[in-house]
Length: 137
Image (cartoon, rainbow, N blue to C red; front, top):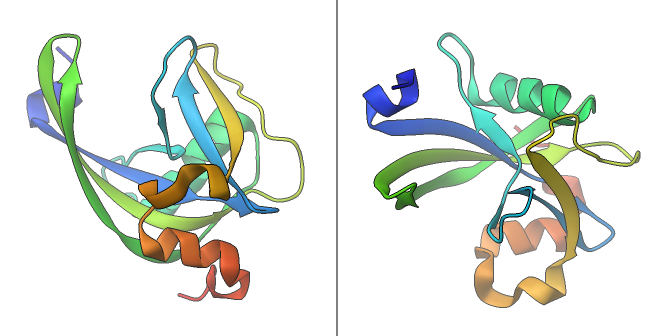
């Protein structure tokens, strides 16, 4: 049993990276579900620090975490067991380079915002329309 399973609810930092009208998403290789990039917040880290660290570990990118966008609660079944997480969501700048995974279990993709429809909360869609607000603290 890992430490996150003992806690019952995971706390995760996630990022909204928008480039050229496309949103960066992550998925487990071979999986069908996509999610915002990021990862677990370690003890003593801020959400922004965790997001930057996770992006460096997973992609090698020198990312910058910007404005706090909000909190998303999520619960689902994983391997037949209930799973819950609290996601702290930030604007994310991954630079202009290519984003590819350094991990053998995940992959990244850019998806057109227009393809996501009403799936995204209004605050996330607004980032694509007004990019200068992404990194105001």
